[in-house]
Image (cartoon, rainbow, N blue to C red):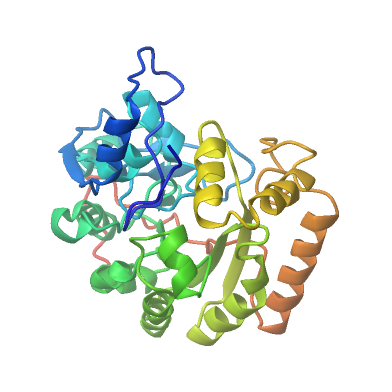
Length: 354
């Protein structure tokens, strides 16, 4: 039975994860019946044993990160975090965007980490894997609770999101930014609303994200932009338009990331291509392989985020030229923050004017 999309969802199906030991096979009648059902989102509490993850990859500009959620309802088909659902014996496909886990004890675990005598204050990035401002955050407010602690203890924090919901917390972010303790990176991979509905179905429109950039910068919060990912023959033609729009909105830094297809993501992405772009699916994959040394994905540090070869060099040249034209810094997508104001829990507060 040919695959078909689900309204409001990115993945086309729910294939088994790579650690699944017992697969369930459905006959054509059952597959047809399941295809008619719109998958519903289920939120589940998943208490965290620890909340801060350490990073040693030279490709990313931070050492520490927090993800308040596992799984993401935004449904971006290209999300490199999808394979993480395999560790929960769930599908990186539809399960990733419908079976969403939140960490209710994240604030308590953050305090635990900060109280340890050996803790070294370094900027923490919230949202490195899954979006901290996905729809569930509107009611659960796990991210906001964490930000309140960053403000209370004067700890530097970077946010990565593609949601205008970040503006809800402008009071905290602007207070932190006034002391060089916060920055925000907004992901804008397309400004084409029709393409957005296919690529990232439950993400706010580009206009809402551009408005968020304007409000953040007007409030003094350093704001950068990620064109992530750049997908050959899908959104690569938008690079110049996006950079022009985000620069006009007030962003001062920008970076792009080439499409990554680790583990199960290759199959999910190929299925999505065949469903939504059958006219160019082969060309898209051909260009991806050209930029990945003949493979579907080159996972080596220094290559996996930018690709290599003539096509990848052309993308880099176009991006850098357009960024310079609009006065955007391309060295990074996170601003330098101050780590000298941190007040460890239990110590006398520094009395910053928050």
